[in-house]
Length: 168
Image 1 (tube, rainbow, N blue to C red):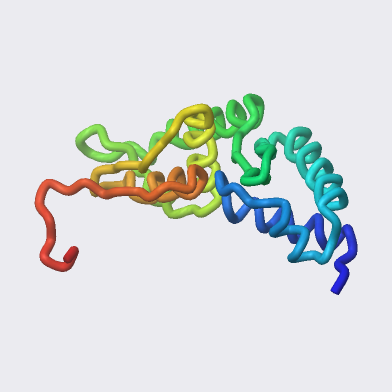
Image 2 (tube, one colour; image 1 turned 180 degrees about the vertical axis):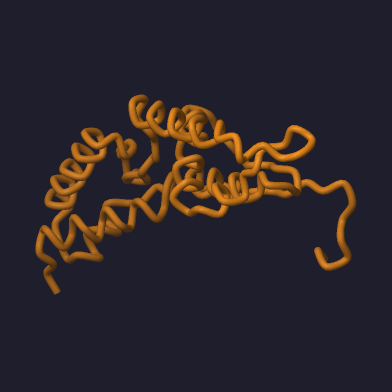
């Protein structure tokens, strides 16, 4: 069944956003939407342009028989600076200071929107590097590591001093 362009654009964008750094052959989209590769290429050009304008990330095209398209999440400099400035302000609130010089972070690390943005900002720093996995110690770094690993599309590993019997 033929799919309208607007529907293709929405579905393609969702598909790519959910699979960062995954090479998707154009034939996959062509079959999925019963559309010519030329139409798919035009649609991807629209998605690429919007991603660039909105600083959502890059849409990289890999030529050749084994090629396709892959979404690489990135954060723009202005957006990153605004987020970091806002977080610095929130972290500077005097009621966050705990005994022993610690800063209360649980509310922020439990907020999906904050974690998504932290993950995207950190992943942007590694966009030109090969990353095998994201590693963290068994502390408050776990949600951040999971978010970064999602944007890089790699596993994350929790390092503990002692293994627990329930970990297999």
